[in-house]
Length: 358
Image (spheres, rainbow, N blue to C red):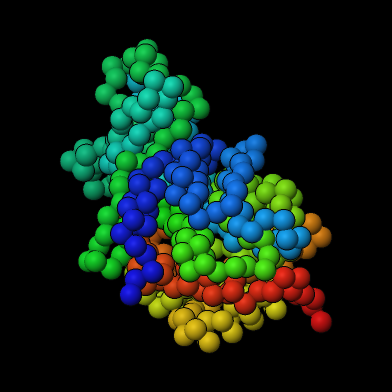
């Protein structure tokens, strides 16, 4: 029987279709909190928009489960006299996928539609070396000049997101933009739902955290870790499926969609907490894959681990195809197993649980 209900999937679709670019996550946080409210005891919002819900508050022992809420996007950076818009990144946006994409430009007057234009193949000769670069991609909003662009409400600093929306592929994959990492936000929300519906009484306070600004350096997690001061943190994010064309497994690792979530071995990942997760997966027969990170995980795990004098932290990742594109793909079974693994691990943690190194 599927862990994910029809109502859950409806929320997921709305959540993924909604734009929540880095620094502008408010609308997505509202959707997330509205879904969570029946399953939690209280909720809070910090000054930069990180939302967090609390289950069983006030026990004196704090466990965090976390995902990040923001998605990659673009900023309007310059408008030519002819009315074409040049951009800079907001997060790790991939300039090579931009040409021919439809976009939404977010202005005070509302959304203005546009496209990333590109010279037609007929106009490029066989010796042309023209390739998409940050310096030559541009947006066309159908304006005749710079003045008309301004009348539309488009100004330097307006944020731009892709228009592509959620779909289910072959009844097996969730597909869309911003699965990185609103799928993590979805998973931790589902954990909260299952705890409530199954009437699980936790012996600690559970903080369900949807952090902002991960895509520009883990900033939201840094701030909220200082605010909450947790005793334990389990972070969920996405990782690369390395079994699609043009990926070198020897460098990236061997991870495949449909074969379960991954755990990461890294300096920031606490060995005892990681072993608890591994033991849980084995006992509950949850499929699991392994990864290693030589210095940092590049996820909010690092922010939590190195905060407050050191917080035992671990990373559970969802395999993803085509990260930072508009067709990110996650296998339904992996999503369910991320939820199940976090849920079952929480049930093993005791109040005051010690993760002393030895």
